[in-house]
Length: 330
Image (cartoon, rainbow, N blue to C red; front, side, top):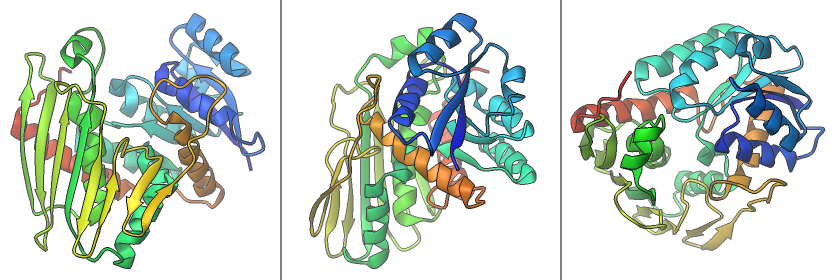
């Protein structure tokens, strides 16, 4: 059965998501509607992606019976409110990360989804890539022995301090650090016994860099770094096991290739009809398809990034935020 998507917002990530959807079979994915507070922006977006229904009211959008799942790509400060509104309207929801800046709000959204028996996922699209599935299989099979050390780094190559003056930003931990944290969580699959963090927080309360050290129950460790101060386009990750390693030399959160102990493996990054704004956004097709399979099979969570997984990631980030003194404005 085709998913009929409603798109919340008209920003860059929504454009990338729709371009990825347009590259997929229409018998599986269709875009039914778009909503924006600006009717002009919504109409322009709809024209670009040939979307039949256009709204400037979230209430009318939520009441559209032709929509069965909503993709939320608005400013992160709206994620909790819109997720709950759409769930209460009977829609399945895929909400961009970060879902919230507190674990309490993450749990609140999950509670509503569970009560409504609707599918909900925080859109950590990394977990949907075929290469991520292959990595998990390698770890589970013990082909590389026992995973002992994880490292991941994510640098955003622009002046973040200037960006947060003019845009609603979540801080580097929630914007980029979340990808490093979810990577360690995927590898070890448990909450660490120790979380240590340092980071720089600017006057606005936003964090602009950080280093996180996680220690686990059997002595395993993870070193995670993220920064807007370092001018580098290389964002890599590695898993070191007792008998081998896995290396991701760039774009570890949306990989097109990974080096395993047995050699290099790749997955396709499709090209959409509208140019993408972010690296490897063609891979959003994997996320959309995994969501479709879950809903068609009656699942309310995605097994590779469940509500429990999301809560683990946010619990770690909340601990980090307290240690570094991050305090986002209301």
